[in-house]
Image (cartoon, rainbow, N blue to C red; front, side, top):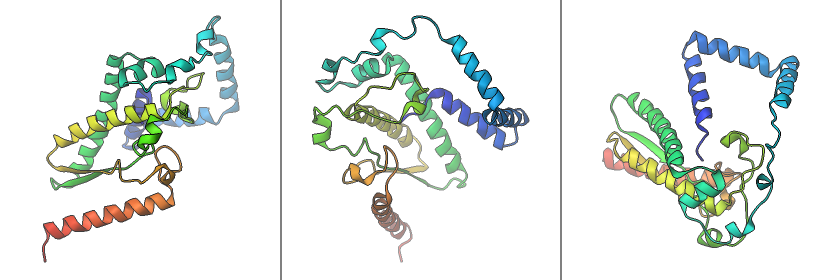
Length: 231
């Protein structure tokens, strides 16, 4: 799942703090104090009350048109109907997110002094959905992801089968970028999980799933080593 652009900027800001940026460090320190202060929390509460505008809670935000879920949507329709974004905005967010991921992978690869670097795209809940789950008419919504999309007041109404399409688009675009880096070898494990019961949430494997993926990965790495360093 793609992290909100503001969250990525904030993570990069915190990273600069850990690397010795005095201004970032001071800002992070003050934010930490503020987050633990009852006084500041009360001021934020008063501020939020004053910022509420009349007419903000429109009826259309409370109404769900179930007819729009009867047919499986294409990517552009999902972006527009579920995220209220036009496709150009979506592409910018995706590009920003993938650039951040690739930049971090390149940084780690460079630490290897020019040697090959292995990146594994792990399976996730959405890439593991079965064909029956994808084609199902069951309205199974995503839950617990508000913090990833800027904490909207109203819950995001998007089906799991629709997020499967978004994840697939993100994954394929990421792989195209990684293929351009000759020093990076990547394994696509997006379809390695047998079913969604291997996960405790949308992205984390449970103990059983982790053992299965670890076993598959270790065998593949051992095979690579044997081919690179034959006895």
